[in-house]
Image (cartoon, rainbow, N blue to C red; front, side, top):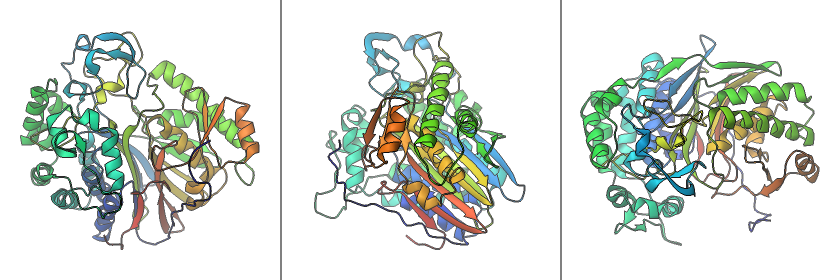
Amino acid sequence: MSNFSRTQTVRKHVAATKNGVVAAQHRMAAVAGAAVLEAGGDAIDAAVATSFAIGVVEPWMSGPAGGGAMVVWRERERQARTIQFGMRSPSTLDPADYPLSGNGKSPDLFPWAAVVDDRNVQGATAIAVPGTVAGMELAHRTYGTLPWRDLLMPAVGLARKGMLVDWYASLLIASTARELAKDADAAALFLDEGQWPKVAGWTSLATTRLDQSLMVETLSRLAEAGPRDFYEGEIATALVADIRAKGGCISREDLAAYRARLTSTIDVPYRGGVVHAAEGMTAGANLAECLAMMENAFTPGGRPDGTSFAEMVRALGRTYERRLREMGDAEVSHAPSCTTHFSVVDRHGNMCAVTQTLLSIFGSRVVSPSTGLLMNNGIMWFDPEPGKPNSLAPDKACLMNVCPTIGEKDGRRFAIGASGGRKILPAVLNLTSFLMDFGMSLEDAFHHPRVDNSGGGTIVADETLPRPIIEALEGVLPVVTARRTVFPYAFACPAGVMRENGINMGCTEIMSPWGDAVHEKEGA
């Protein structure tokens, strides 16, 4: 039983518009994307602007030094595509540099055997080759309509102001202050006197801002010189020098060789509609498996019930058993992941669902002193023990939990995804079922209680679900109940948009204090 109020009500209003909508985990990033739509940009232009803006205002969740995936819907072609921009291990990485300590399991996201000094978790030795800039480059080159420079200017402006440290930012910084203090540059950016988290006052208005002047220089350079500068130019030189000075092994060759990939989607017929899931090293294939099992397991009624929820968690249990056996990315349930998701629809019906990440919260807890960028810890995605499906090796793609998705049925189309590590797939499956099995509105789907079964042998159910549903879940696996709260999240944190009969709308996780859906006419 939780300590939290049972009489408090939290809602997010979903408004309809003929214009475009950006739904993101930070309102200011959504505002940046919506402004691009208002300037005549495509959904992809807005996604590029949102991607870089959210890396400024939510730097511990994602940024240029991370990776991810995008699912795109092109209305004119009536076609969905995947853009894969996941991280890779450096080509000169030596697994012998990550010896097992013999001291149990890793303290962070994944229950791998612990490595000496947690070299695969924290510090420069945990940094993988980033893919986000290349992903945005490919998306823009393929579908963009506005100049690259213009799309980065909102992020430059936000960095010049500096991220406002409100109570929520203070909470997240405090959660990782001990680890941030180990890197002098991370401590200088996020902590006071190298050890105390920057905080907002208990009753005073927030006025503290991060000094992101180095990021201003980096983003300005990236805007003017173009995206390949991150991989082949001055930014690449600075990143490699900084990472190697701190003990990492990424080389200029690793960055120069990196390319994002444009591929097809996994197209899954479901309940008379189609779900377009991401290809590649994502959870897209697992989503497809779950949908196939659910379609044959029950016939939807008026509202989600014990049968539909039970079959959903059964499907999740089966697909996670295979994923953990064959793909190898089990996570520790208590550890916070570092991911963000945003979805965009423009006035013409083009859509995209974008998930990008640094992996752990604050990534490797290392800041590049020349660029001001917080670096990823993608090496932690690999199992340090040899001979496993996902064992650590050089020049190898990282297996991600991201699951950006586009679905369509009965004249409605939606783009959804979530942050939250292994909880992402269950959240996307819950929402897909609500929208396609039960025909819920976007607002009802985002407010409806959810369940999570992500391979840990226990179902987590929203404590507000009716008792008959809880009992049906208990017939599948042991159940613990939890309240949806601001921190920590018992469930993943989704964001989505929908289009029906030429009308667009968006919504984000109702408990997220920063997340919002912004129409292109709304100002800051």
